Length: 184
Image (cartoon, rainbow, N blue to C red):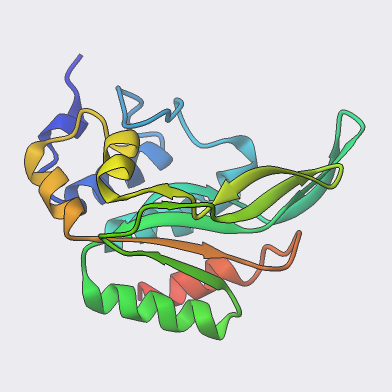
């Protein structure tokens, strides 16, 4: 089976492939540990995530804000998304709209090393998942995008890695409209 990711020549190509994956158009080999589609909890976010990817905000991880009981444990999540952005104007619009919506914004600079990030999931009060963690630009690209084309890798190296997190546990109605507004 052909690897569509290997043919990616730009961040825009990666965004289109990610949008297609989110919408179920392909489930071929994909970068990192992507499954055959988004998790069930994320299905309601597919329209905005696919639009973001096609606009150049190339997502590598996201989760809704929610508070649920699962197998007897209290699971709390903050709405969060991580993405690569090559277009500086788009980056500026996203940052402005995210700030207006009250989001935490983590910009990973090209020369930044390891960063702990922010807890976005707790299970019975204990930290479980972090967003905004990074192992430095080259390490992050190698981890998230194995098997992509060399031209796309070079463009990622010049791009910004951005994390947006709603600081309020369980809230799911601020981050996604802010993103939708920024990509218009």
